[in-house]
Image (cartoon, rainbow, N blue to C red):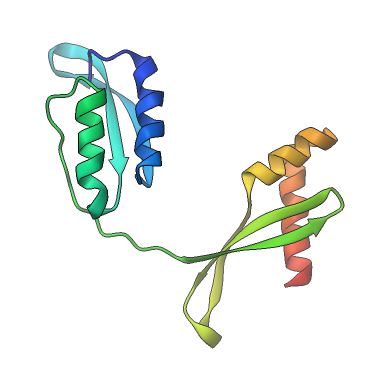
Length: 140
């Protein structure tokens, strides 16, 4: 879009996410006639396409939407709470496989928990994230 106030994009992003979009992002692009514009990308489940299109047409100046269906592979996820010397932190654990074949692929402390603790205790965010990971691995 090359004719929409940039202020609108944050509003549209929030509405799309609340209505079931999995992710929404923008990119600066050069459009026809060498005009700078914004590309709005919405990733949503197939059953949310109609509502997302309705929101985009209603809230933006676009006259058309391109669609593509993509295959998605996802890992199983679970949240565990770990105790640190600064307090509790939720840790997201991504796994692959089932039962005895279950393998941890990725472990990541929740940003919101870590940032709140970092601010409260005047510590670097990365330090809190490291402490949370150390706590997770010490009990695993």
